[in-house]
Image (cartoon, rainbow, N blue to C red; front, side, top):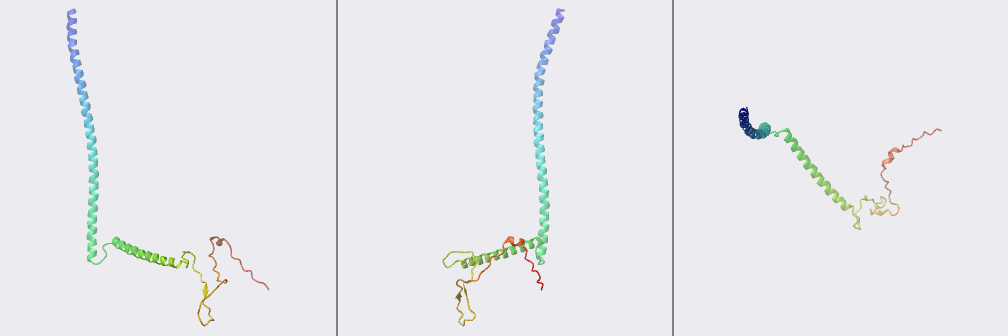
Length: 181
């Protein structure tokens, strides 16, 4: 029996050694398979990103080609219109009219600015001080005098009332009562 026991022990030890060697090989192979699967997943993810970017570029290319075709058609229509003596397109005509309107507006603004500068010269008092007050007459030409020489008003200058205030709208005008006799 001992002999059988030794034989079985020896055989089982050999099998155990082979199993342990197989475990190490299996572990090594499992690690390598896991690394390869991780690399495959990474490459797949990168490829999907590249494919998505490519599809975006293709869509952009298609829209740009469509826009180019539309612009070519618009150019042909504009050339035909110009050959017929018409404006190239309604948009261009509107833009031209807007440019002319802006040019006239700028010219009017420049004239207004020049007029205001001239008025500023008129608003300078004889002593060199600028004022924003309106100039009031300080002399009059008498109608009964044969020689039209201006006379100064003196202390009895005409009175110019101030403008109505904003709150005057709340005051009602008095109603005239009819007089009974």
